[in-house]
Image (cartoon, rainbow, N blue to C red; front, side, top):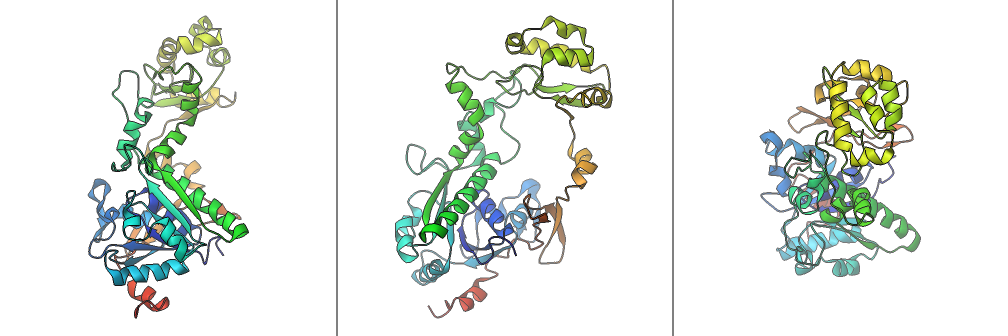
Length: 383
C-alpha cells in the first residue's frame, strides 16, 4: 500500500509547477483528479518539447500527468460548478494555479471552500505571490529565472545572462508545493482542520539560490562574479569548475589547492599557497589548470584524483550517462503505456518506500476520460 492511498486530490492546475506536485502525490498513492475545461483541457496538453506528441497530447503531458484522472467542467456553468463543490466535499486536497482573484471570482476561493470542507488542504501556486506589482504577470519559468538574478549565476563571465536549460522554477516550485501539502496533511491529522498552502515560482527560485543570496547579503552586497571560464560557482574559489582534458571534460569541486597541486604534480600551482588568493586570483588559477589538464585523458586524471578522495567527475553527455552502470543500477527507467498501447519511456518517481520503487505505467488521461465514471461514483449525474 502506498502512503497516500485513499487521499483525493482535485487538481485545477496546468502546465508544469502545479501538475508536477500532483504527479508526486499520485506516485505516492493519492487519487488525483484533474479538473479541465471542456473541449481544450489544460494548456499543458499542447506544450510540447521538440513538437513531440502522442495522440492529441504532448509526451510531456503524458508523463507529468501519469496516474491521474480527467474530469471536464465549465466553472462558469452553475450546474458544473455545483458538481465541483460536491467533489470538494469529498476531497482532501485542492490545488490551483489561476492568477490571484480568479478562484474567488467564481466562488472557489479558500474562504468559500473552507466553508464547504473545513478539512481540505488548499494549495495555491502563483508566479510572484498574490500581492505586489507582479501579481498579475504571467508566471512562466524563463521569466522567473530572468527576473530573480539566477541567469547571472550560470555561464562564464563574458557570456550573456544564461538561464538553465530546464524548467527549474516549475519543478522546484512543484516540490515545494508537495512539501507544504504533506506538512498540512500531517497537521490535519492532529487538528482535524485544513490549511491554506501558498507557493510561488519566484519564491521557489529565491530559495534555490539561498546559498548565493546569503553570501550576497552578508558580503557587502557585492554582485556575484562568474569565472572567466569553467562555469564555476560565482562565489567559490578555484579549483571549482569545469576543465577540458585531452579527450573530454573534468569537473573539480571544492579542494585544497596546495594538496591538489601535489597530487597532480602541477608545479605552477605552487605559486598560490595562500587560500585568499584562490578567490582573488581564481581566473588565473583556473587558466593554469585548464592548460595543464589538457595534457592527459580524463581517465588518467581520474585514476590519480579519485584514490586521493578528490571531489571530481567526468562530464557525461546523455548517451554516456544513460549507458553507464552507475545509471543502470538505479533502475530509473519506466514505461508508460499509452491509450493506443504504444510505450513511452520516461523516468520513475525518485522516491523509494521500504526499498520499493514507485512505478506507474498509467499515462496522462484523455480529456474528460473519467467524467462519467466520477459522476456516477459520487452521485453527481443528477445534481
